[in-house]
Each structure stands twice: as structure tokens, then as C-alpha cells.
Length: 111
Length: 114
Image 1: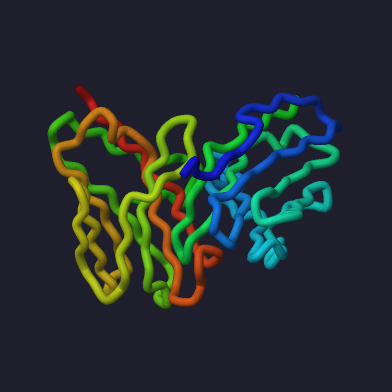
Image 2 (image 1 turned 45 degrees about the vertical axis):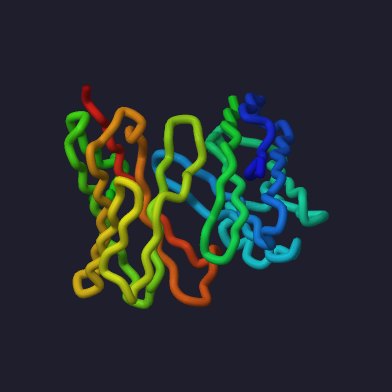
């Protein structure tokens, strides 16, 4: 099993640009999560899906953030327009019961 | 122990020594706990878990202890190796909460000195 796959690993962009982060969960896992990690706030849950349906997006900071899961094997997190304060590591994770399995993350830098 | 501020607590131990990382959890309803290890440039990885009907669980070189009375969790790593250097997170949730109910601590940075 390849684990949770995220792309890109690193993204550097300018303020105002659109950013799209991608995730492929582990096959057979029916829940998918997007987290953001910063030194200031640690790991924050942004949104999670169950069976491709968004269940709780209360962690999404602003309307600039949106997430989709068109099928069981793919999800995107989009930031439009991006701002410097969005700079962080974004993790996707999928779960089997209570156990979360994380991808390697996307390091986002917004200049 | 867990940080409530901006700075990640750091534990420095000599290679070969045992290390103990502590975590105070907040929700008395939590009954399932997990320790994750995050190496530099990687996502958190599952190490070991424990349910509230146990007070101790052992893995390979790791032991998790749970004290429900004082809401305290600890991770013991025996005979530490350079590869143990990482940030360790505890996470808590409750039965039926699933992974979406997981709450993560801020983490402890473990440094192994040669």
C-alpha cells in the first residue's frame, strides 16, 4: 500500500494566486481529512469527508478555502486568493476507524 | 509535557537511555488515545494506541501508560536510538467519535544526543 499521497510536496506562490493541493487517500478508507500545521497553532483540522461527503468544515478559516472530494480516491483543497498567513504545512489523512494515516504534507509558502 | 504556549517543549536524552514523554489530556469523556511520531519533513505516523479499559500497553521498545484519575498519558521509549528523534504528539478521542473526534496535543520534541 502506497499510503496517503499528496501533491505537490512544496508550493511557492505569490499573494493573490490560486493554490490547489491534491490528495489520494488509502484505498478502502472512507474518511478523509485536511489538516494545517503551524508552529503557532499546531495541527488544526480544516475539514473532513465521510464517504466523499463533507461532514464538518467548521475548521476552514475563511471563504477563501474550499475542499472537494469528487470520488473516493481523490480530494482537493483550494485557496483562492492565497495570502502570506496561509503559509503552513497542509496534511491530508485518511482513516480506518479512529486511526488516522497521514500523507507527507504540502509545504506552502505564500510570498 | 504538552505545551500550552507557542514553544514546543523539548526533551533531550542520551542515545541508549530511556525517555518518557508526557501528555495531559483535557476531556474526561475521552476513552481512546494514540501517540504519533512526526519526523522532520514527514507527516505524523501512528506509534501505539490504548483504550481506557487498560492502563498500560507495550509495543516494540515503546510503552504507553494511562492514568485516567489525573488524565495523564505517557510514552516511554526504551534504549533510544538516533531514529527516535522527532516530535511526538498525543491524541485523544471518545468511543463513537471516530478519527474526526481526535484532538491533538501541541507535541514534544525529542532530541537524541550521541
